[in-house]
Length: 119
Image (cartoon, rainbow, N blue to C red; front, side, top):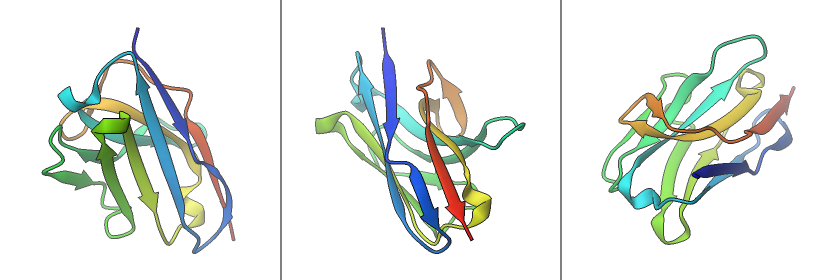
């Protein structure tokens, strides 16, 4: 059974940076394009960023373009999301998932990691 585990969230101030990490257990991520999504309270989960299986291409939501960077380390079976210049509007639970590139999640979800940005 494939499991995903996100980590790296926390409470930060506006303008700070965070690096989220997602480890995939039970499968080899090198076969998959991967993505990050986030969910605001009371809202549907939304797309944030994606990276192709070979790392050659990335795609971002307009709201994070220029501030967030997705990357992957297949040797560690991990996907990362570097988040810079955080704003209160980035406060959400962040999830990773395999994707049909660029924005369609497939497979299972992890528990997510909470990111809270204070003003």
